Image (cartoon, rainbow, N blue to C red):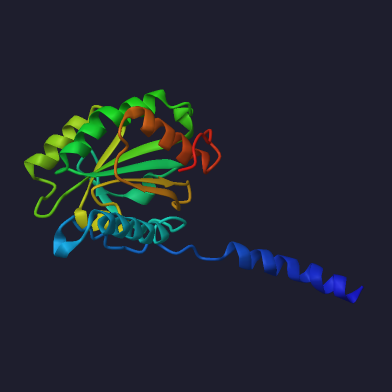
Length: 217
């Protein structure tokens, strides 16, 4: 009887400990790509290296929460990205210097979002245009890309390359973030076409229970 009483008394303490476990923030991780021929590197070695680097980045991103990130919204106001997240959110990050990425953003992504089988009211989309190298928020390339994208996506913000790196969001990156600001899935690069993108998005959303799981990705 005494043992049962002690266990019952300990239950609130055990639950409070479990709920107070801190989720670590994303660990910024440099993604260094090598090219075939560099220092005699073969194509296979390049592929293995890239996969190794990607797995490192994923481990330091998925199941980690976003750090406090400041972005510039469409009204040119500095806001906190974390405060824009009110429901599961696909955060699409793309630097303004990537030609292939820009085509992907203008064609494949919007087509995929419109054709996805998941109810759009169940998740948000935030598009972040990132500066690249010496670019600033006032650079012509950045402003022109933002203007084009604002006609397609409901929420478009500018983010510095430095802050994008804090999210491990370099080049073209997609993060699925839950309503608590925790990254549940991370993907680097773009899909080949809108059909592939639909499958990827639906699968990502299925990980938090709001989309059909159609592939193992």
